[in-house]
Image 1 (cartoon, rainbow, N blue to C red):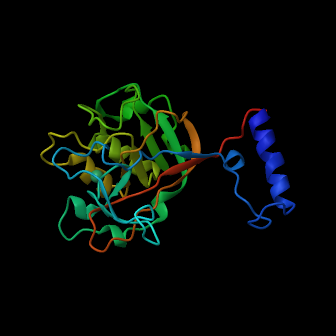
Image 2 (image 1 turned 45 degrees about the horizontal axis):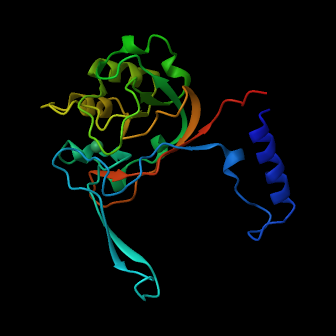
Length: 244
Ligand SMILES: [Zn+2]
């Protein structure tokens, strides 16, 4: 057991004995092992070319004498880590408020592919058992990039890969790319193929610090009526035991 985990367990035991002002149950991230896989939403975050930037407008400020700090947000529904609803790319399709939440919470496999850009086929996953978990997060081999620069190229699934994932029973495809189709795509074949195979879409993740393996994913979309997408706070918790 690593000293970090041992310390977290000791801290957890102290918490259970009631030393905390929050009562007997206190959350310790060290023990829970939560890994944040979301970029920070700020004005400098790169967005899809042509989309509006993220804006947090301060409406009231304690420093300026108000009783509270209060802000309003303006952003594309596809900024940062986000879910695409079928309504994003098809008429009369499911909006984000009507999405089944099950794909966005549960066991997931993180897999690094050898490519840093371009299309992904089943061949790119020869080194893994895709059926290990019902959700898949794809980490490209591109070096860690600034969230302030929109990537010139990225990986995206082919319809052939979507068919294979569908046959494995995969219900969610997540990616560190900003889309599941290249910027020049005219038909959004990746989006349509994933949806046709019952696979939800999670884009814009930060996976550079996440080793391949099995995790629990939590990335619930907001309940936006008629929405085509929603930002999420995406996080992982390891399901594989820590080294002794
Ligand atoms: Zn999107």
